[in-house]
Length: 159
Image (cartoon, rainbow, N blue to C red; front, side, top):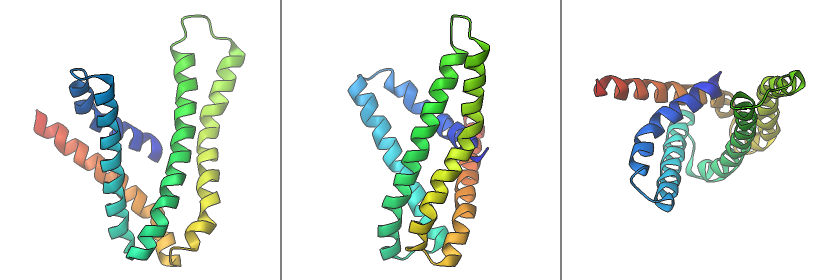
C-alpha cells in the first residue's frame, strides 16, 4: 500500500514535467526526468537525514546502500507493473493461466520487496544506531505522507 501511494504521488508530481516534455526532444525529456529523479532522491536524503539525525559519516555510508535497495525494489515494481499492463492492455484473449500467473506476481510483489529490504537490514545495522534503524520505517512513512500532503496542497492551489 505504501509503495502504491508513493508511486501514485510520484506520478502526480511528474505530470507537469510530462506537459513540458511534449515540447522538447526525447533527449531533453530524459534529462528532465533524470534531473527530477535526482532532485527527488536528494530531497528524500535530506528528509531522512533530519528524521534519523544522521551524522555526516552515517549519511555518506548509508545512502549509497539505501539507494541501491531502492533501485532493486523499483526494478521489481517496474517489472511487475509491465506484466500487469501487458495483461490489461492485451488486444488478444488472455488465458486463465496468464491471469493466474500475473495475479500471483502482483501478490508476491510485497513479499519480494520485504525480502529485499530485510536483506539490507544487517548492512544498515552496521551504519545506523539501533534507535535510528528502528525509526527508519517510520521516517519513510512520514516522507510518503509529506509527499501526499504536498501534492494535495499543489492540487488545491491549482483550482
